[in-house]
Structure formats: structure tokens, C-alpha cells
Image (cartoon, rainbow, N blue to C red; front, side, top):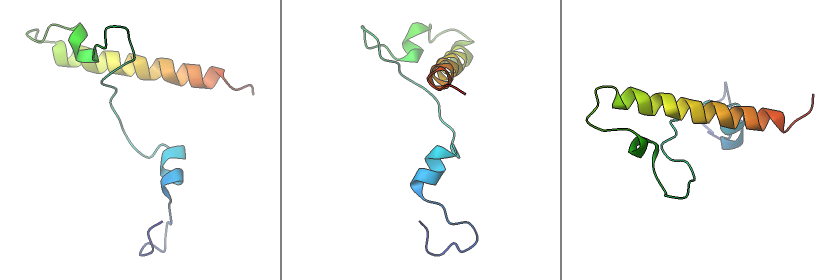
Length: 72
């Protein structure tokens, strides 16, 4: 809680639960302990875009897994 903010008090739990942040996934648990960027050739012109796209793919898989855990 921020005591100086009277208009919109927010705790860390509110921030995380409401997903008021952005993130990039840079590593996934795997046998060889590779980072996402290790899967692509760093000399390639599209290496950075490929890493971001792979990160978004992993994020989407996590979202779908979390969504499938609940019944509505």
C-alpha cells in the first residue's frame, strides 16, 4: 500500500492479481537448461523476433494451461 495515494490504493497482491505488469519469458524448464535465445542462431537477422515470438508462444501455453485448470 502507498500511504500517499488516496485515489487508488493498491497492494502488491492487487497488482499481480489484476496483471498490471508486462513481462517477457526468457527461460523455460528443460533438460539441457537452455534459454529461449539458445534455440536460435544469434547471427540471424530475425533472431530477436524469433525469441519474442517463442516467448509469446510459451506465455500463451501457460495461459491456456491455467485456464484449463478451472471449470466455469
